[in-house]
Amino acid sequence: MTALLLIAMVLAFILVDYVVQLRQAKVTVPVTARKPVPLFSQIEDLLPKGVFAAPGQIWSTVLTNGHVRMGASRLILNALQNVSAVVLPEPGKQVKKGDVLFTVQWGDRQASFRAPASGRIAAVNTELLQHPMRLSGDTNSSWAVVLQPDNLSASVKAMRIGEEAYQLLRNEVNQLRDFFAQFSSQPAMAQALQDGGLPVAGALQNLPADVWQKFVHEFIETSAAETQEN
Image 1: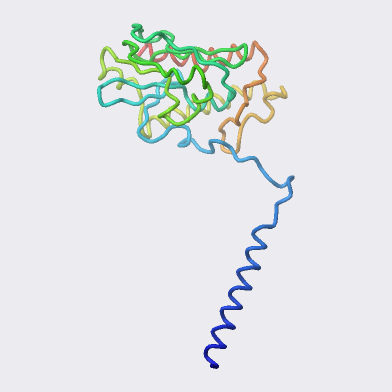
Image 2: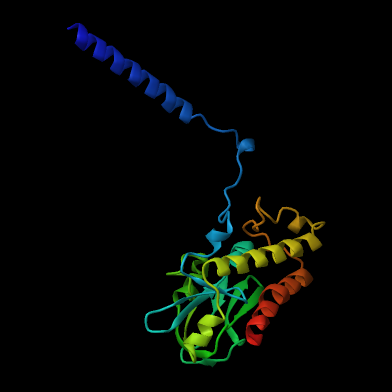
C-alpha cells in the first residue's frame, strides 16, 4: 500500500510539472517582439537539391526523356512576389539560345526570361495561365516550359548544379545587394534585405519605373546574355 501511494504521488508531481510547463509554453510573445519569418532564409532554400541553375534567372531539371523543364528563379520571384500573369510560348515553337522563353507580369510591369539553350518548346504549363502565383511553388508545379534541346549535352554544360549552382546564386545575391545599396536612400529599398543578405519578400514591388528597368536589364537581360556567349 505504501509503495502504491508513493507511485501515485510521483505520478501526481509529474502531472503537475507537465501542466505548469504546458501553460508556460502557451504564454504569448508581445507583438512588438515578433519578427517576420522569411520565406527563404539561406541560399540553399532558393534551389532544391538536384535542380540546375543558369544565368538569366532560370532553373531547370532534366527529364528522363532528355527534355528540360524550366522555371523562373526563386530569388527574383521572392523579391518581386505578387505575380499577376504569365505569358507562355506556343508548343512546338523553335527557340534559339537567348530568345524570350516566357514572360512574367507584375501589374503593368513585366520581365522576359530567356532560353539558356536552343530547342523546341515541347510543352507549357497552362496551369500558370489561371494560377500565375504557382510560378513561385515547388518545381513540380512552378515550371513554365519544357524544352526539347537541340543538343542536351551542350545545354547541360551551360547550367550549374550542386555547389556550383549555389555559388552562382551567391554571386547573384551579392550583385543584388550592391544594386540595393545604390538606392538605399529610397524608402522602397530601405529594408530590402533580410539578415544574411537575401531579399525580403516583395522588396522590389514599389520600385520607380527607371529603377525597375535598370533591375530587369542587370539581373535578367544582361545575365541571359552571358549564357549566349558561352
